[in-house]
Figure (cartoon, rainbow, N blue to C red):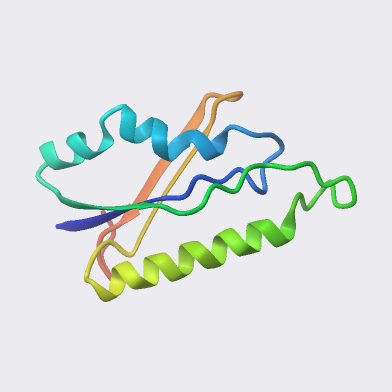
Amino acid sequence: MRLGLIGVPSSAGAHGPGQEKAPAALRHAGLLGALREAGLEVEELGDLPVARFQPDGANPKRQSLSRVVRVARQVADTVAAAVERDLVHSCSVAIAPSRSASWLDCYAGKETSA
């Protein structure tokens, strides 16, 4: 299985900063090596631009909506380019240090999830 690893360092729609540090933290912790040790072929596709949380007092329930939309479009474009190269269709990571929550979500094929 070929995977393209795309970092999305964003906390744009969060309720505080920190999540944007997730891609670098996971790489530093050995994510690439662990995936390769598991027998996966991984191509490092780098990170999208950092989109850090900024309070949006005018929209407390929709924090920085325009920034969130911009990040989502960047992710869609980057994943589409990876799909064209027959790499993973979607892989997302989030870490919220203040809540100790994290997740990694990958889909390996057009019709097969892994």
